[in-house]
Every structure is written in C-alpha cells, then in structure tokens.
Length: 386
Image (cartoon, rainbow, N blue to C red; front, side):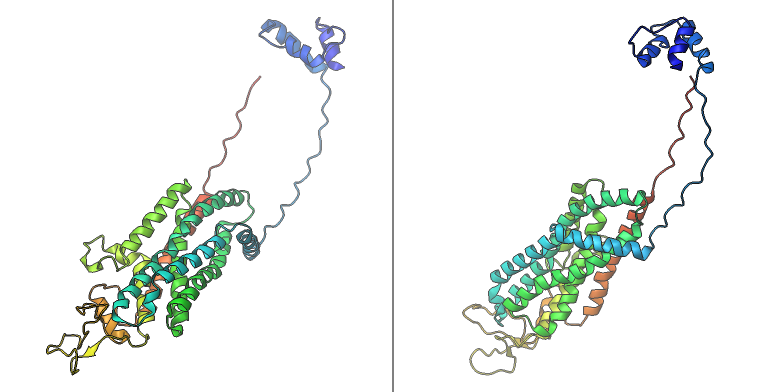
C-alpha cells in the first residue's frame, strides 16, 4: 500500500492491475529511466517506508556439549563394525580371497608334505608365496579407505568428532581382522601341508603382525588425493618388499643405500621368522647320511656340513642336500638366502615388523590430523554501497 501511494505522489502512478514489484523495478532501473528520476523516487521513499520494530536481542542457546574422546571412539567403533559387515570390500572379501589363494598354493605345493631333500626348496618357495601374496590384497583397501577419508574429513570439519578418535576406532577394528586373516591362511596351510601344530600360534602372531604392517602402509597411501595414485604407490612398495624379501637375492649383495630397503620393509623379517618357525622343530628329513656311514652309497670324502646325500631316483646327483634336522636345513639354506638363519630371532623379527607398522601408522595419524584440521578463516563479506 505504501509503495503504490509513494509512486502516485512522485508522479508515477501504477496502471490498474499492474504488479507493484515489477513496476517499481522498472521505475528505479537506470537502464530504462534517467538517473535523476531514479534518485527522486528513492529520496522520497523514507517518509513512506514502514517503521521497523527493534527486537530485544536474546542470548544464543548454549552449544551442546561435545562427546568425550572415549564416547566418540566407541560410537565410531560401532559404526565401522556395521560398515564392515555391510561393505565386504574392506575385510570380508579379502578373507575369502586369502583362504582361496592359500588353498590353491597348498594344492600346488602338496608334495612338500614329504620329508625328503628334494621337497625342502619346494617348502621354501611355498613360504615365499605365503609371505607375499596375502599382503597384495590391501591394494583394494587403499581405494575404500580413500573414499572413507573424504567423508571423515568433512565430518571432522563439521565438528562431529576428532580425527584421532577415528584413527583409534579404525585401529581397534583392524586388530581382530588381522588375526582373522591369519586364520584364513594358517588353517589350510597346517591342515593340507602338515606344518607342525606346535608352531601354529607363533606363525599366527607373525602373520597377523605382517598383515597389520601392510594394512598401515595401505592406510597411509589411502590419504593420496587420487585413490588410483595411492593404489600404485602401495603396489610399488609391495613389489619392492617382495623383491627384497631375501629369497630373490641376498641382501648383502645389494649396494648402499638400496640395501636399506632390505631392512626397512616387512617381508624379509617375516620370511626369515616363518622359515625358522616351521623348520626348527620339524621331524627329521630323509635322504642324508653321516660321513662315517658305511655300505651302499658311502663316500670317501666328507663335506663341511658333516653329512652327504646319496643319489636317488628323484635326485640322481645328490644335489638337493640340506640336512636331516631343522637346524642343519636352516644352516644350509642360509648360505644362499641370508634372511634364513638357524638362530632363533623370531622375537626380533616380530618387533621389526611391528616397528615398521608403527612408523607408517604414526605418519598416517599425523597426515590425517593435518588434513582434517588445516584451513583458513573465511574472508569477511564485502560492503556494497547503493
């Protein structure tokens, strides 16, 4: 009502049934009306404008108290447990694949059950695949964790929880999953290939720690801006670790500083510890004779090891000769593969694997915290004068 009266008083009455808003915009538009006319209309408006009632300011409602760190961690742990069940790509699918691949290699190396000299190297090759193949699958986790990181970053910036609560909840969920991976690989190996059961718990702990170390590496690379780049980085580390595992070549034959890769990646430590664990307490292997043996197959010279292997149908020249007892076999293998030793270094190897995992986990937490908390204050709005 005030607008129509105002326009009539300044000599610009509206036509009947005209839209007041559209007509007013045409009147004050300098593209269609002279600037002086626009100024006249605007200057005369204050005496028609409705009075504004000032409201008494009220204090803002108190901000709801944020959940404690333990509460955030517990809530996130429950949420991720549900997501683990609903999203199989992160853990469930890998359990199935690890079990299937382990059964496949057990069938391929089924003859390594036999306690003969020619099967010792076959068992060593199975240990190599046992070490390398299961930890190739976290490359899938890199992609899944990267997608999760994008969501976590937004939720942290919205104040829903802290980045360290997420890291702790994720880490707590990882531990039982790593032991489950170990069971998926251990059970078919021990049942099909007949590994000594008294070493089951030791090997399970080593395998779980090894999977956890590579899971930490996958987590670290999942923070890459592009998930495909993160997957390529992980595969690169996995391949280098397999190359420097101690079976392909000897670490002491590699020049510095490349030799650092031999000690800074987990496979070398896991390979040596697993080889010792299953061979040190294994039953005696057939096919060796002490140097003082007489009768058919006796020789007139004695190798430094104190035993020799007579020719057999499987090995006519007796070249596969590693020893009768576990320590003898380990000593023979250590001459070619220096990751293997007859000394009990299982605890040292386990600590080294865990230390590598902790290194990547700490770097992951630091980068996660920096990514979720980094930012700048928004620029103040510009003052527009009319």
